[in-house]
Image 1 (spheres, rainbow over the protein chains, first blue to last red):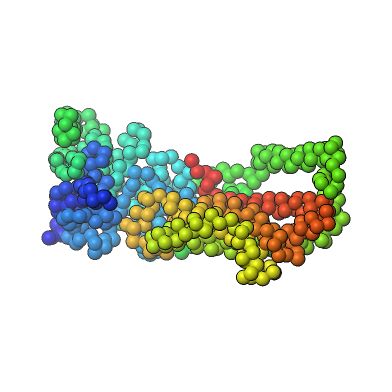
Image 2: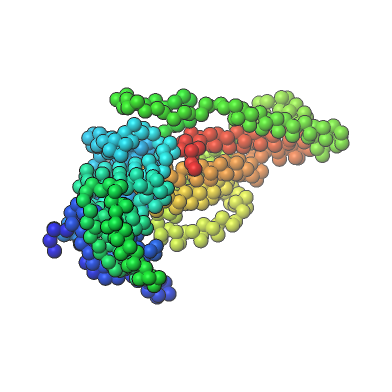
Length: 259
Length: 286
């Protein structure tokens, strides 16, 4: 294996075995590679194992088949440069925003005098510079999620895993968060795996859209999205955009038999 | 840096920003320490208690039961005023026993609850056993503690401890188990040591739940101390009640009841207040 890819998912499968010996295969034969700095959207029906895939890549779960390499190294060796954004912000209510952002560094024991300045910079990047000393209950849901994104970025991750990060937000906030995450990604240059239910979000954000079919979760399509960066509103209403979404819908539809 | 940062948001006045962070942000408006609502609530509570005394005294005055059967609050208060040192010294004894038992029960309960949460082995072996022991009325254990720890202070404190212990085990365990799984994953992804995870997330998360247990335990501990004094005591409010019983001195007995209720109430509010001070964020929970 080489270091050419940020992540290599090689023939990965995940099977849960229940106590009565029944096997439940959640993922099967997943094989894809992410180049450094690439933004990959992952779409699929709920229950198709997208979250399991993210957790496996993050090292929280182990695959039962195949292997996952991050920069050519098996994830079990311990990787420092992965961060995760969850569906909800899950900020600590007893910490103010900047201290929430600094939490991962405290976990790692790498917090320095410099860290606080960097955390402040991150908050300023997402437009919350003036809210550093505020607590999460003083922020809207979208703002809280932006703090959570800063918390993920504070450890300078090379790979950012996002598990339906905007799923709990209203449509308008979600749109502005999409612009935000594109800007953040372009600023930091990290690779992103972005799991979402929204096909248009996946197309607008992704360099690629990986469609995961369900029962068991497997890749049914891997579509390159050929739009220039930075993308704007105009792309969302272009003919090419709706071609992409139609194509992806058809892949998800075929899988579920709706077609 | 290693200490969890628990801030007192509910202190009076707006939060002060440390120097060097002049970002022009505005602190959120803080509730005043005594809002009109809380004064009204306090006034209603006091009125309720006074009302209870009034009804009690009226009943006694109207029905006029013999004094060896029932007495009113006036007679009980008169007894308190008549022998202040007697009641004060015995109250102090019971208070000490209850507090020692509560402190010990809390410490052991939190430890035990944490062990249950963090160790699958402890949970498999100990949890059923704990539930089984919990079904024994702790009052029934009091004679055993007398055998083990003698007739003095220790046996009463241990009875109080035995009773105060269980709510804290359960509430600590529940509190630790309610930490959102995303936070557990955040800790794992960032390779947090178990100690860091415990001190920065788990235990702070569990504080509200632990305090709920403590609020139950503190009243139970007072009861435990009194039961201990019933069985083998030569001082304390339990002893006062027994002595009054043997002398058919109902004013003294009722005076002891009132003092017991008062200290249980006061201790409850102290624990409640400490909980609120330590958990300011709970007031803002959705």
